[in-house]
Length: 198
Image (cartoon, rainbow, N blue to C red; front, side, top):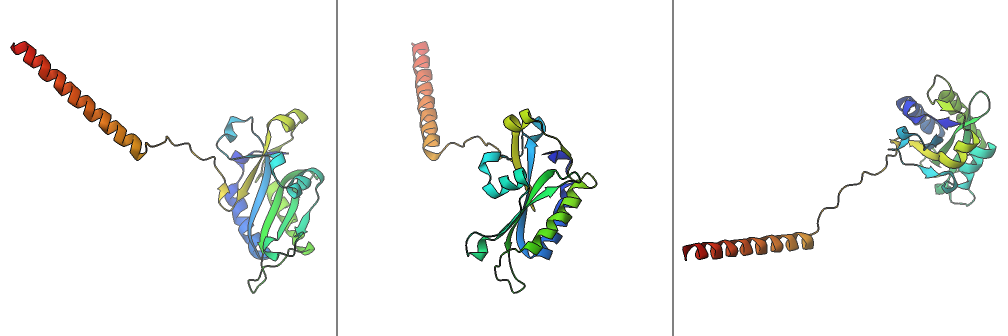
């Protein structure tokens, strides 16, 4: 399913997700969505190719497999990844919760019980047009589909390209050229005036 991110109710989702992160006890979240990059409406949003995302997130999109915990003993690197499904059982997005901590503030791993919150997020996204989606056909999937991520800060926009400012060496050269040119112009004018006076 492809997300229509310009008609997504971002504020509703962000408000709900701030409550979910408090309930779970995690630091932050990302909701990964597939979009059609061929649409001119999506040109200002930063995207990444499907192959560039982590294998767990790809797996959640393709096989609806959830993941919680960590492959290492490092609790600070904890994450939970769960597919978000619509009422037909189709993946509409993937939820990633990051950095869970205990009530005392110590880093801990996510547990199987934390997966229940993904059902709540699925219900929010698929209900009430909070995240409008459309089916992706095979051609779209292979040619124009990319991933965007919604966080507490919204969608990440592509960086604006600013014109390069001249450095100090360039400015000095310009000033030297300008003053040399002005001196030559003044010299030429004096020569011209002296020839007229003759």
